[in-house]
Image (cartoon, rainbow, N blue to C red):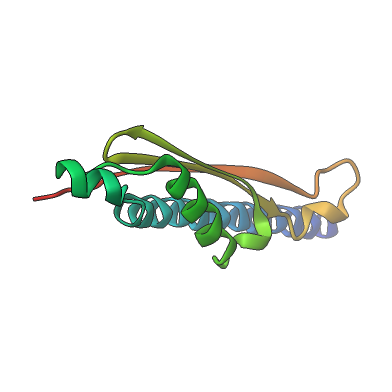
Length: 130
């Protein structure tokens, strides 16, 4: 009697471990995407008119948001993204925050459990002129 119960418990714990590894992987993917987006936006969203006029590096907020949405839509994680927020927090610094959905593999087959969870990631990048 105890052997089948023990085997069921081991299978259940293995399923939980697998689903948590899926969530951890999605968290890492979201963090990597946020870092890549912040880095790309900090260098590509230069306000050229301001730079040519004053010589000061400044990020164009509208261009930064546009690049953020375009680059995130082209990423491997695009189908799982819920939100992408791009904020220029200083003249040469951009912050990217995003939320992605991580779908469970085994837990969704158990009654009363969610189909997945939401992971969040953020990154900040500054352009360095030197």
